[in-house]
Amino acid sequence: MYKCVVCESRYEPFISFGRMPIANGFLAPSEFADEFFFELKVGFCGTCHMVQLAELVDRGKMFHEHYAFLSSTSTGMATHFREFAESVMTGYLQDHDPFVVELGSNDGVMLQHFARRSVRHLGVEPSANVAGIARDKGIRTVCRFFDEDLAREIVAEDGQADAVLGANVMCHIPYQHSVLAGIRVLLKPQGVLIFEDPYLGDIVSKTSYDQIYDEHALYFSVASVTSLVQRHGLEVVDVAPQPVHGGSMRYVIAHKGKRPVSRAVRAQREQERTLALDRSETYERLRGNIDRSREDLRGLLHRVKRDGKRIVGYGATSKSTTVTNFCGITPELVDFISDTTPTKQGKYSPGAHIPVRPYAEFAASPPDFALLFAWNHREEILSKERRFVAAGGKFIVYVPRVAVVG
Ligand code: DWN
Ligand code: SAH
Ligand code: ZN
Image (cartoon, rainbow, N blue to C red; front, side, top):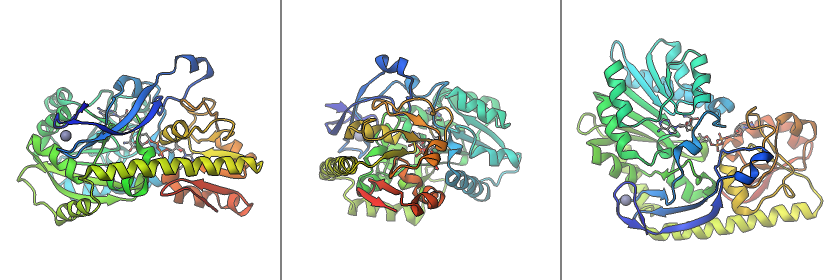
């Protein structure tokens, strides 16, 4: 039995993916022998409805001065974050000298829009390399993990915030009670916490099990976020589905009673009941769907290989670490993974040890099939790869189901 990180109730995991490495731990052959592994297993708390990793990995093993993921690598996401920043500036920054804090600000892809308009801002980013990139762009950044202590230090130095923002970071933080106690201190009376993360409803309905890996400690629904924040005198006042990362949800949180609660909150909670996100049977079914997805993908890859075709991975995502290791995808099946991130190139994928090569190698010698590990950027990639498809190239996708496209 495991103890829920939110409400301390006991639960049993509904699935184990087996031994997994650090999802973003791209490595050199000299590091293979010492590679770190843990058991990736996930559970549903029947009391507060939080879906969560049963075994947590030390944060220092994941977020450090060699963090591999750079937020600015997708133009689609850069546009999304410009729009996110603009909606915050028009909707929530009425004060004459507003102050905005972003958690997990990475290379500054969102905060740059506030910096450009001279809005007082602070990024909180514990991974030193990406924090350094943001600083070089003139974005004020503190290289620390956000928690209650840091929140108090920020208030002492800069005062309270009008808006605290977070994209794909809250779900990375299992010590939510410290974070939310900090948010309560940091927010002005009318202030808001606005964050978005991959949405549990999409993970369940699309069987996008590759969202499950070490960094993603929590898998949020409106129900579980409501139960979490109300323990800290906070309230969900608005929610809005987002198309990014295969289906995300944006949550607007305020001090309880300070802002009207939009109708969208109740509507989304009703939809979650229709999806049965509050029932353990849903997660048993999800496990069955995950096993089927694995069999389908393995079957397709082996068939393609038997036909003598070449397969290359497209996008060395963190998510692909779960897929390659869970499905037994080896360098015999996939020649290499093409990725535009310089820090990943020349290294090997975690666990499966598939070489990561620059995009130029994909372009110079296109494979028969591109296994779309970055399926969440499908529109952006398909529009970039019209020539690959026109020349007969095909994409293999596995979300929402295993299929060949192109
Ligand atoms: O939550 C997280 C999200 C925001 O980012 C983190 N835990 C880690 C990371 O997850 P991910 O690695 O699964 O994110 P992406 O955005 O799916 O990664 C895309 C990868 O594909 C990057 O390495 C860049 C690469 N890429 C590429 O080579 N060509 C991406 C595009 C769009 C391309 O055209
Ligand atoms: N917001 C960016 C980055 C997401 S990756 C985007 O959506 O693209 C997750 C980021 O959260 C990493 O840069 C990691 O270093 C950071 N992070 C992890 N734990 C954190 C914490 N406790 N406080 C602030 N940032 C954290
Ligand atoms: Zn719980």
